[in-house]
Image (cartoon, rainbow over all chains, first blue to last red):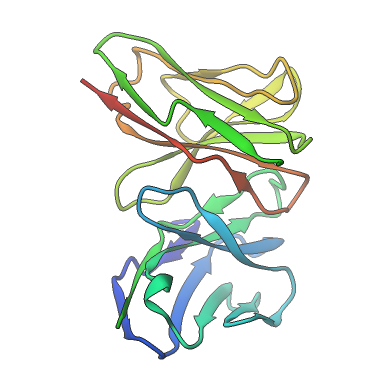
Length: 112
Length: 112
């Protein structure tokens, strides 16, 4: 089992729809959870971080964390073509506070 | 402006050569990291350093070496022992435990 798993996609949604991106992780004691957006050929940029169970909203983005199920998700409301990118889920495990484990990413296409 | 600077942006290596990728940060972060990204894959950790003059191997350290003589600098050498070095290399830093990573713009290394 991979430490951080994501559906590689591509996930295709129409403009204005909600895009739902999912991630599971294996270390039950993981402490912090991040979503990064990466455009082709560019470096990742932070979209959201979440540390506690529940939802965290920032503009069109909502991160959801369920530690019991070892599951974290990212919802993008009113999706725009500019949201088309690869979204990387990242988790910092309990035993390695300086080590962040990245998933392989989900490619999102937003159709105009 | 604070940030992480990687150079060069593109690098070509001949078979049997060692090459060094530069990474400099002015964020005053203690921890620095090197990741490798292959097409369609997530980030894999090569080396990381929590403090000056100390560094640890990541998941794919074979064929690579690093140094951390200054807080601001964390160069990566890709040695001739790395048989498949063609990839996108990302340098990152974090301000502490369980925190977000700040990335440089990346170096794309190609073997010719």
